[in-house]
Image 1 (tube, protein in one colour):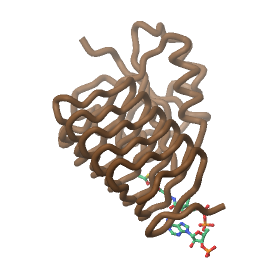
Image 2 (spheres, helix red, strand yellow; image 1 turned 180 degrees about the horizontal axis):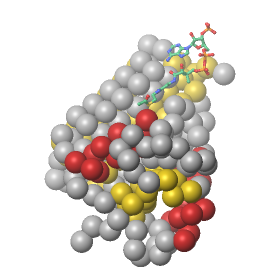
Image 3 (tube, protein in one colour; image 1 turned 90 degrees about the horizontal axis):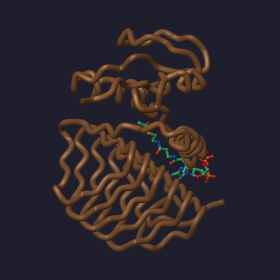
Length: 208
Ligand SMILES: CC(=O)SCCNC(=O)CCNC(=O)[C@H](O)C(C)(C)COP(=O)(O)OP(=O)(O)OC[C@H]1O[C@@H](n2cnc3c(N)ncnc32)[C@H](O)[C@@H]1OP(=O)(O)O
């Protein structure tokens, strides 16, 4: 039996997730935001994130509807704060996404329309696989990662926690990218990238 959902956030990322959940007949009881706003789907405003604590953690599931455009601690901090209080984040998977049966997903993973995830890939908690991204076989994607729309990961790629891979970036086979890296939109990564590095271009090179 699916539990009712509280959506955290009310921006574009939350809207995409809301449409997926509504198409799956999930009950979204409300959304949180710093101040009262209208919601295009008529979902009620509950209050700020602290309002979540008024709900029994066993009775609801959460969906983290706040997107990122680069490296940000915010999604990780909110996820950890609430999972430490025993709340559970629902994974959201668009029906058009294709996942090999052997794929393993952590908690609260979000997989958008048209994504393809191949055999033996592992994706850790709270990671976003955005629209049309392709992850080939045997990849290991850490927690709190954002693969922005249209990214391509070849086989055996490893990506550390908190890393952002920008729109349309491509990564060749067996590359390792560290934690909290920022890979620019359209980059082509052909060498390993150390923790905390920003890299852009074709081929991707470190920039300050
Ligand atoms: C559904 C959604 O919308 S999800 C959101 C998806 N969005 C993304 O993935 C965004 C990814 N972000 C980017 O690619 C950004 O351009 C970044 C993070 C790499 C750089 O941003 P900033 O640090 O603000 O750099 P800024 O824009 O000031 O540019 C600095 C220099 O880098 C260059 N540069 C910036 N981005 C790139 C890029 N992707 N590839 C090549 N060069 C780049 C700029 O041309 C500029 O060069 P210059 O100094 O010679 O003029």
